[in-house]
Length: 165
Image (cartoon, rainbow, N blue to C red):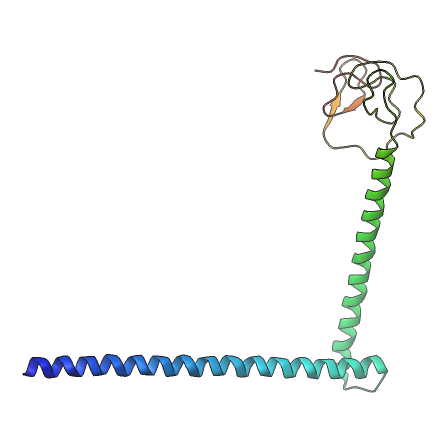
């Protein structure tokens, strides 16, 4: 009989611990919700003071300093956005230039700006009205005969017509 009494007490103990764990979980969830509510109120406080700052209302020195920090960060963001716009404009310009690149009269392949020979078939290019490229791809082939730089993948030098390795 003592065995069954101990078994019964152990089962009740496990049950009580399970109930306690459920209660602790419920309380922790409530704590988490309350902490989220506090953060929401803090955000509203910040929005309140930011609006006052933007309206030019007098603020406590510490609050005014924090608002000025935000203004400086906003200026930095604006500068970064201008950089992004400049990069996008440069890419658009390069894409437009690539779209208007001349073609080889023999094989129809696109010919690099300023090239005197086709990089695909080696035919001489008589006149190329496209301005020379300022920015070059980092992957280039150097002609062994004349030392000219050629785009990766070309078979013939665009400067002298020499076959590239």
